[in-house]
Amino acid sequence: MDRHRKAKQSAAIQPCSSCRKKNGKLIFYAQDDGSVVGLCKDCKVKAKKRDMMPL
Image (cartoon, rainbow, N blue to C red):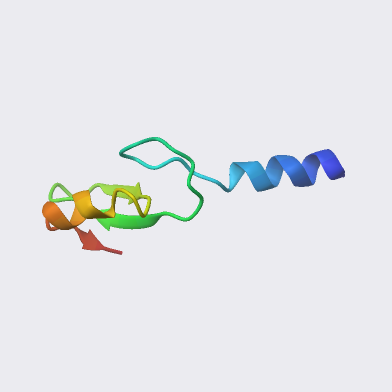
């Protein structure tokens, strides 16, 4: 059971779509073509420069 819990916790952490670092919490944005990207706090500036809308 312990091994199952640890595997489930590590699967919840997703990498940033831009820098690929696993920083924990991501903010999801919609791009102009309709695709969705998850960006970390460090890459939030890139989303603001491109006028991406948060979801």
